[in-house]
Image 1 (cartoon, one colour):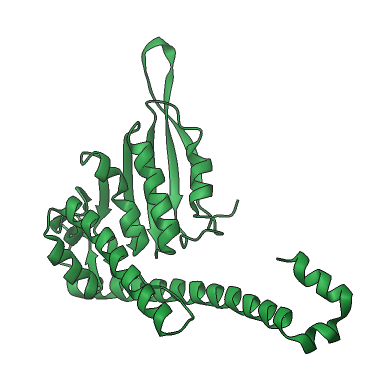
Image 2 (tube, one colour):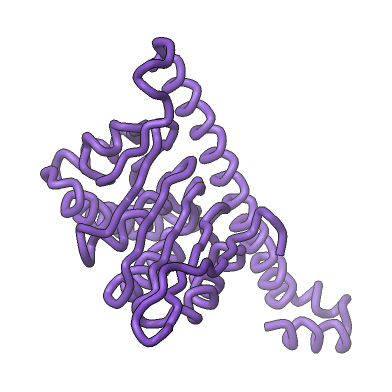
Length: 266
């Protein structure tokens, strides 16, 4: 398993009665959340299977987000474990898009579950996006569905933050970044770790914030481009297959052997 993959490990914790050693499972969500990637619901589920009753779970997040449906699956998976385990989430870098949604999953079960942020953590919320091909009816239908998805995500942000859903929807429309203590002030996280002591030299907060937001935008745009290229590649394969299957001339030229191969690939 490479360093860039989502990974888990068990750490020995405090002993409990009858000589049982309580352990902690650590999971890192540090890539794009993608059904065929390392940070998929399937992979995270495999990592959590070894969790024993009473074991604590720690999830560190540094992700630009990813697929909506896969993100929802990860969110619901973590919620289920939060019903029987104490879960701490740490935003060790960027929690953007679906990663910001996943970060608050344990707190939807128990608000005392910790979501820890640092002075240099970045949190980003926006409306769901999609990559689609079709006519005006398909696009209109997808737009309506995206709006319902946005409302679903916003209601969860509102529940955790204590803000009005209208205010959350406005922040999502504006594609809003929160840095460091702003994440606490806006109600998404409930634990803050200060890096710089009060004795340190005065820091140019706006410059640091601008740098972190710029870096976050770069990571998010890169992830969106990769997902778009992946979706485009899948679409092009499907179009090529359909063109071959439904083009009589191509079928005639391909011959019986090629035709059998085409249908075997379906």
